[in-house]
Length: 414
Ligand code: SF4
Image (tube, rainbow, N blue to C red):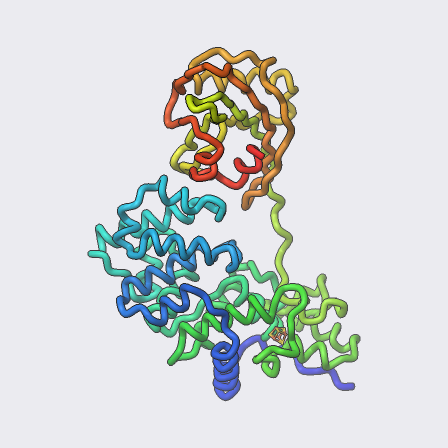
């Protein structure tokens, strides 16, 4: 059989682009998920509130599943239905609502940006992707494109993880999909493809396709509304394997084809795309943490929690007094440094041998593999101890769960 032509990495045929848009939008109209931010963006007459609603949803959706976000989103919009309401909230309130959603700096940045819109932009959201990205802290190219297209109808594309996967498959892009050269190409492609009359729906349709049909491991190609445009699928069905291998081994010096050193794997089919360079391993950290408990005035157990600094990892969240540990610290030394640290919080000497070592809890943050070495220290029942440092406070178990604490600290308490 003659070798198939090399993959076309671009959409150069206007008729094909028109058909693809039409097929994708028709599928979206039929199959889209009913999500609260979509309903709000479609019906809200106030453009600033429309932009705000999409913005909140997009920030929450970064790194977090749709199913998890829905409840947080509804509670957020109920509590702060407008930019003005959010601008008046305290960081503490924001962190409390965000608790459990992870990547806490997102909530903080959202609130800071809302304050900026209210104080510097007279409460009006910028209306173009360029201005959104330029004027709002924490709003990157993707979020700006999403808000501008969905809320304001700007014909601008978006590129997120789902779009990367779909476009790399549609056009057989097998070079490292996190490299700047490939990302630039994908943005150009997204901007060229976006439907001019329904840009917001088109962008959401492309992302929806990646989330529900063109999924990472077992894409449902048979049900895919754009399968006729998909070069990866075409290559799978074009066989024989030796020919496919030849084509996908990289065509000349093409910067978008898979590198010759990592040829097409016939077991993977369309999931040969996209390809990513190996991820950096998360950094390992050990932290000693101590659950100090006392009997409160009403007989209930209470725990001491302290607030983290207002910048850096888990900024402003509450935790049990904790101390990062140097590598290879012996347990005896570990107890001593923790006892000193606790003394600074409660203003009384703490005997290292009184600390009970309970066990270890691991938690993966985006780039840190954190191990908490958990200690407990019950204090005398009738002790009325005021923390020596602030911000810190004694809380019951119920209050603990209602506070702005990270998921990792909930695991520690468990
Ligand atoms: Fe993805 Fe398959 Fe559709 Fe191609 S045909 S875009 S691989 S779901």
